[in-house]
Length: 317
Image 1 (cartoon, rainbow, N blue to C red):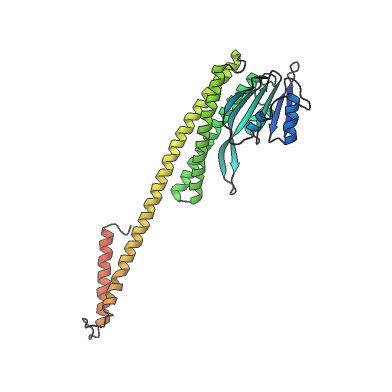
Image 2: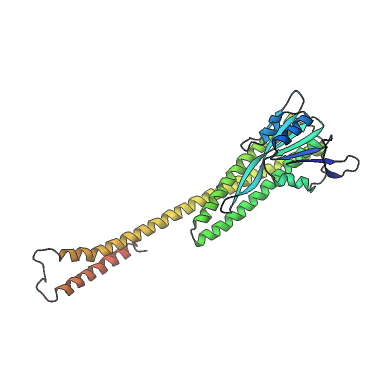
């Protein structure tokens, strides 16, 4: 999907256009080969800059083309995907931002995401497509804010899953905790990579830094660091929770095995006594008319005695 937006310098009106005008923003979401070629031919940039941003495994980085001054920023943005059974999986994907000289700004993503959608709906204060440095920093700030928002959602879902698990050990909830734990790993890794990109941008003066824009970048770095701390805290808590539930499950299994073993011992007592009286040798009470009842009584007494002993040893609890 290819869309072109422009903010008029005179009217300050944000609108979608059909031509490549200077100062415009080109947004590519899972573009076709034809769309990639169209953008590259009109803007005279390398196709690799766009294709790299469409690689789901691409790492956050900055790449500068010395010949024409084109700059590629790649950062990770948070997304929510659905599993086959309808559960949410928190993960990240790369978002490419290409500054084409002083003329154009391109964003490239494999899927739709909240960060870019927010700009398309013009919900960002002081947003103009021709202010490329500010645009980049606003994206970085908003991206860090969405990471924080998703982390809070993960924390809430963890608390709900823990509450359900307290009442019943369901595999579904344990698998949900596992998915949340994986999401936190993805988030932590991506946030650290994004921090490197932002620090490099701030120190390296890769793009023009105006005083107001620099404040936005510093705020983005602060938000990102806060998100890293939150992700690490939630990850540690979730790891501890998973370990605790693993211990509880193991303990419950040991309890069940202990109970079943005790029942086996109790049932073995009358079986053993009856097997004695089944031998083809001289036995006590074999000629007595009360022999069978005496044997049953002995079996009952010994079974009760073994049961009481096992109960005393907490083997039946």
